[in-house]
Length: 262
Image 1: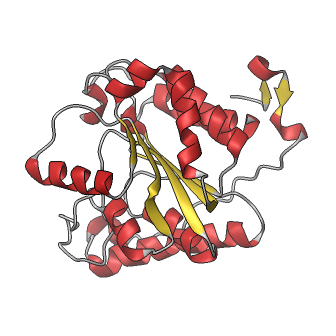
Image 2 (image 1 turned 90 degrees about the vertical axis):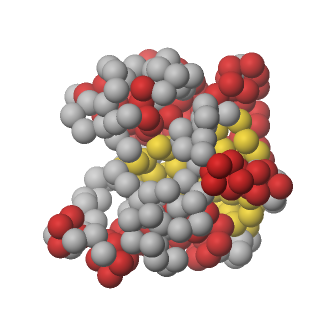
């Protein structure tokens, strides 16, 4: 549908960057039918393999996934393992995903949909919450999540719920991205597309989280994307892309292009 020329910046991305579709990770078919510990770890390793191959080639991997750990932790892990210094993280999400245990498998080795971010900081000593920029959460949470949030804040997480983003304005929010780069050697970027919500372009309640009020707008998402691109990043991942939503599919493409433009 699109070329690489962005009208807004009078810039043809493909005159400056080489971009390749590297294909799908070879996730075993049985993972979908039987998501037990062994199968989930096999799926995670499949994504890690692809990410490491991209990094070996000197490329920046962009992983378009759907759930965790494949579309999140499996991308962060190779970056952390290959970086001598600290790794910063920029995360856009409606949910914190900091439960101490994966609720699907109840296994402490699994960085699952509600726990992957907690596991990322548990498993990697060169990832510190003081270099986490967490953007987009909103509304009420349960008691367990409340305690987890308080613990992350005690450890220095830079937290920008949508209420605060609206008060600050998107230009001020862009300046706060610097916390992920302060004293770090690499930055991992993660977009959970349920960060788009009641104020965004999604047509209604596609995946539950998209119907939450105070959602990020498409402009706010793209403005942050461009600014992240200007600063640079080692890897990018997406999850929770609503099935069948042409609007969000196109938004994902825009996000990638605006980051590459930066």
